[in-house]
Image (cartoon, rainbow, N blue to C red; front, side, top):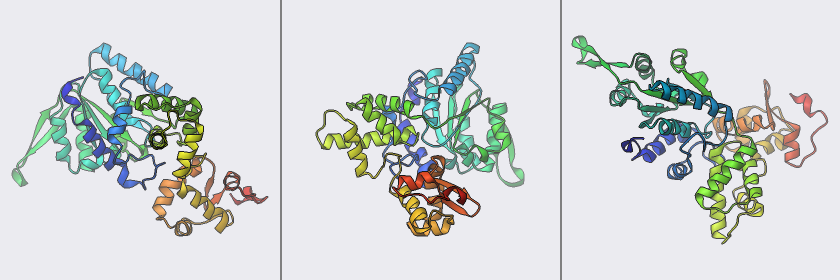
Length: 362
């Protein structure tokens, strides 16, 4: 990899990560959005090769074949789209691609590009074979999208010189490069843009077994003497998301340091996460408040979003976009046309006996 590609990367990544997610999501310890103090910490935990990347085995095999073929053809690979929920490793995979190909990487994000001219400036400065990583690509302005269509397909941009009736467009040829787009909302990408990616990878939530391996690797990097059983307990509370797993590991490390522990066992993990109000299902204070409101205040539902939000004292958007996705995915809540309904699992998690007709509510 070019030595010029890496200096300042952590700063760019921190800023872009924040723009892409942190200001859009209520930040909690179990939030999958990147947080302000994590850019440097995440850098030291990132693997640099596909072999050391844990999880997503099918995707890794596909991507390895894709990159090996490009190397043998001695041409930059086709453009790559990485789609999936936040915190699963899209940025890490983009950096791995640049490491594997031994080419520089340029990092920016959709929200950071305000005008088509911003993107044109970046594209015109790319080197042959360079990787351009566009995080939250679905948030590009429309004018920048249209510019990107031409650049990705024909490797040129049209530079407008002058203003008004006398303005003229000058085509500028670009060196061949590879765009890696990352998105948490693939459905928001226009079809013409999706069609220009030669390889699309979908990242899935991690099973506990893979998260446990990831936590053990991260503990080694951070110098934490972590027992396997403790890593298992961390993985079960991490919502299937590596970013959350690494964040919880850092908080447990803090606990161990303050309490002068040489080895972190299950008890230390449970004590540390109890302090942060993270229970055995990965639910935090806000999640429990939502479940209690549905079960105790509304008899299990159905309850409308506005009433539910008022009961827990949060904005309706926070409840809908931050709490509900995980609660629904894990089977604690069901969305119905009449409102939100608590499942039998939710009643039991709160230590309450569900009504006999709980299944008839949805």
